[in-house]
Length: 105
Image 1 (cartoon, rainbow, N blue to C red):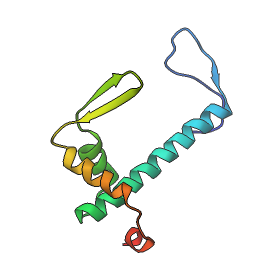
Image 2: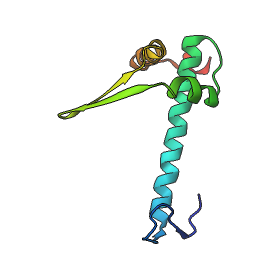
Image 3: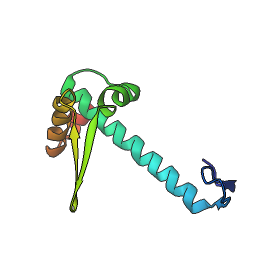
Image 4: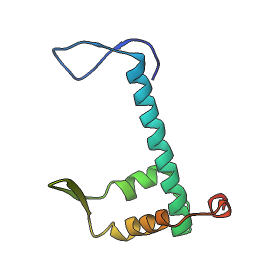
């Protein structure tokens, strides 16, 4: 994405220009998503003792069926039984602080 003024896609009747601030937010969100994927990849490599590419994470870890239940002030994600073991391993490793030696390994 660049800081050049461009016409926003999606709204058929409204054509407005997207400014620098909106481009910056999109870029920061994309960077944060990449950082999160990289952190999950490192955790999965430690837990599963094998390398994980970003594509493999997306296909096998993130593309699992889940049900979203909204009740009162809570949103609950119910993950499909086939994916729960992998998600549980990642959740447990996120709760434990890691040393720099474990991250570098």
